[in-house]
Amino acid sequence: MRFPRLFSTALLALAATAALPAAETPATKAAPTPYPLILGPIRLWEGDAPGARGQRPQDIPTLTPFPADKAKDTGASMLVLPGGGYGSLAEHEGTGYAEFFAAHGITAYVLKYRLGSNGYRHPVMLNDAARALRLLRTFAKRDGRDPARIGVIGSSAGGHLASTLVTHFDAGQPAATDPVERESSRPDLGILCYPVISLLQFAHSGSRKNLLGDQPDPALVKFLSSELQVTQDTPPCFLWHTVEDKSVPVENTLLFAAALRQAGGLPSVHIYEKGSHGLGLGRPGKPAPPWADQLLYWFSERKFTR
Image (cartoon, rainbow, N blue to C red; front, side, top):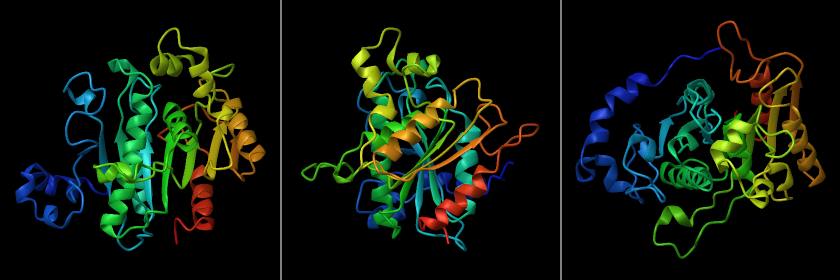
């Protein structure tokens, strides 16, 4: 099932405003941070991103906002991490999800994070995701949204990045001169769709190579195998996978769910028999299981939707 691009007209209408110098953008005057209220892609850092290999588009991580339907706005926000094996970014797991969330009252932001196919390695991807989460919390405070209802969703390798964020976060740096860096990078919940979790026995070799290179340090492989990093502070998570997935074995989800439960958490886990990898919300000829309906129910339990 695909959802229409609800906000393409709004994005085009505001493109000219986003291109104006900061001094000419009306929203800048009231903004408590260097980030004006715009709908175009937003750079994570004003200057070059830390560790940037150049100034090409692929060297500049950005967030693209999809505002919630005003009639249904719940005040919650969602960070969307598309999959693609750390080598590309799948639009149906980015824009497709963001439009779905916006239609259900959750403002979503799609992260264009840097990729192994462009020469980047860990920790660049995690740094991009952590910075993006801090920005969402900054934006929530600026826009009157709830800074304590910010989730992250990731699919496949994006699911690995999301699982890394929910297990490797920090409370922010109170003394930082950049106000964004004072914010916590901990999501309030995580949604992991057919995720890459382990970089060990059940690893997706392409994702591991793009993330860590050809001969990664064994200690780093364990550090980024998220089933080994769960603690009692890991936020609540919703996970789904199919048994038929031949790209990322279902054991990845089962391992993470077991780790969450062992740490005292109550994960919402949905395993479906049929379905190939990368289904997202479903596409022509490739329907997805009813995970989205079950996610909305879980959201209602966690006060993310009305």
